[in-house]
Length: 350
Ligand SMILES: *Cc1c(COP(=O)(O)O)cnc(C)c1O
Image (cartoon, rainbow, N blue to C red; front, side, top):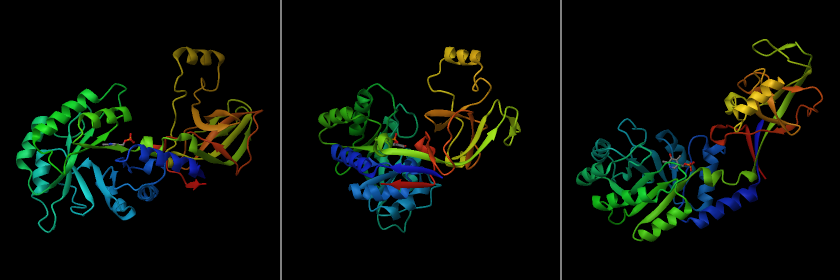
């Protein structure tokens, strides 16, 4: 079993601190729900008092509308082929192209209300959105939609975003679309300091940060991922194991642990910081990683162990040299995960 143990008090304290410091914060609930599952994050967002949450795709809309009381903003821009949910009083679309604006505003004749939209501007991310000129064109064509604000998705660079955001703010103002109640700008990946500066220089606007990682995963110390040991087999040098008929490099144990590709456990690069010189030194010593064994994210006896072969669907095989105490089957060991791609078998909140 691949489990995530959550120190509930510590995690909730962190969530409350974040939302208190940033009252307009829009929780982002997408993909695998940052490892927690989207349903749980919807419930938690309601408890935090969020009036709006953001999902990644239209496929995620229905569950969010059911799972939360908040308005649901879709981060992927609306496209004419997204017919899944056309109108819902709590649904907010993102628009980034003039043809989509025309298409949506000409849209569903049965809807009693115009669809709620935010207009996204093309940033240096170069993902989606209107250019300054496109936004002026859009202003001339805004038909039957309710513009509730603008959106800016910024890259995760180290440098300041302020100069770029200032430019986009000028474009928003120049478009003439920023009249109440649409003087609202949803931003992604800005620091607290940048937000404070912006709020000070554009007091008539409301800035609403859309936050996922820093919110849900911002208190890593509250999260303990653990994998169960499923089986342990002693092997001598030369013993054959695994799908590929590989042979054991020396006396030791093949240890089968929970967590495979279906959980999002993949082959990891040997070591994030390993320099060419480190690698050369290991090759000279003739270590196991030099023999083509790759470091796994599973820790036994305080050390990250090597995969005996690439992870399977629900389990992984590790090789542990003789002399290392191996916990009995049923015990749990620490594992490093990438939360945004991990599907845990269970989540235990204490
Ligand atoms: C995913 C996403 C976010 C949240 O990103 P995090 O790095 O998880 O905080 C914000 N804005 C947009 C447009 C996104 O796609």
